[in-house]
Figure 1 (cartoon, helix red, strand yellow):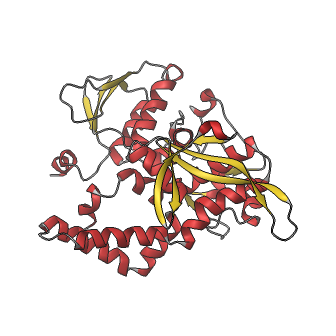
Figure 2 (spheres, one colour; figure 1 turned 180 degrees about the horizontal axis):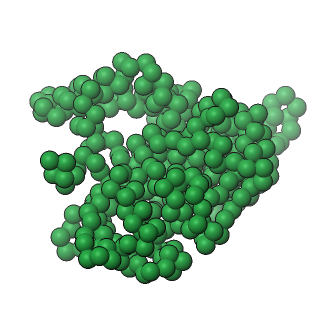
Length: 346
């Protein structure tokens, strides 16, 4: 299977958050831990901010983490870490376990029941088969998709990793959609006793629209914010919370998820060998690169470190140049299969 030809269709960000893993034990402690920026600069850990061990255990019992390994030394992906962050935010706005269970049913369980990952792949295969005069690349991509579909282990992994929560995160990062996870209460009559109850309902707002079922057909309609009180958790917040920190340890989970040239760059930053980072954000020849200046004290580089981590973690740049204190320039790139990186390997 030629995985490289899928790069145009499968985001590097999607690969980074699903493939890279960290030990669940590295994320937990007896008490929840949240370090200051200054403390983060000096640690040598995968995660500076930790969840309470008992909280994770409780979430497991409540079956809110169905796609997490059950074994003692379980490992999780960045996508799964984002789900933990999401549950934490829900708990802040409402201590009710029912809220988290409803979120799980709508964003996770529903996707598994519908085999979202598998069906999306089948739909893509079907679209490719409809092409009347396929190019060589079309045929290679079709072959790659069919190889994935026929690989039972790979399909199991895909079904486990793809859900409506992760798809919302990807829509925000990859497609630049404005994505918000929302819940509100609606009145529902209990048919057994006739009583009217208020129950929480979840939805995903994308660019101000929500998907509804209209006589068996899915349609997008405007979400009316003024109709009812509601709670919003932006996908942007979850992504930012995952990548936007100043932990410079080579063991940091959000550095380990980066490409080799990006990881090496953070070692240079840690050692105070970087003067400036410049990111090319798009193909527009008239656009100016985004530049961050560095000084000889990482406590004064905190914002530059955080912003650079967020750009690299989300792959939202084309290429970059680091100017070092010794006068040298170092190129870095979010895509190991780019033409620039291929040239370097020759």
